[in-house]
Length: 178
Image 1 (cartoon, rainbow, N blue to C red):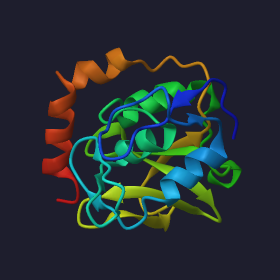
Image 2: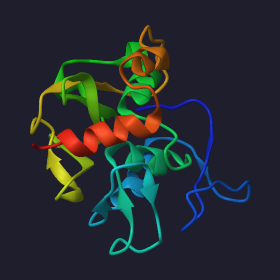
Image 3: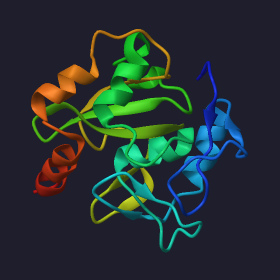
């Protein structure tokens, strides 16, 4: 996993960024931050990080946002898929620690995302399950890879299906694990 660029880490309890916070520098930072969320609950939009897993909650893309040090509700699975772009592989055996893994869900080509942690496992967040380690193949894998590839999939593709960010999460909340 490699990442060019730097992301500002999110301040505890606020879901906002601060220039005095540590910077994201690669998969070890991402993995460390995502592992620290194990046991947190699920919420339908973004994340609420309180510094305590018993009171923190995350959506699937919320754990990725937090892991990358981005603001709550700054992405969807579709926008992360676009950021991975040409680095996408459909060969699960080629996934590396820190890769993002994408799933088809709810009638959408890319409807769910998790972080690959090795040994055929991911960390993600789901309703009635929260943030936990799961088998990479527990849903239909679309592909996975590291951030930074070029892509023909754009946020406009996402916008064609969902009029705004909130409606995406309303849809996800109403259809997840029906």
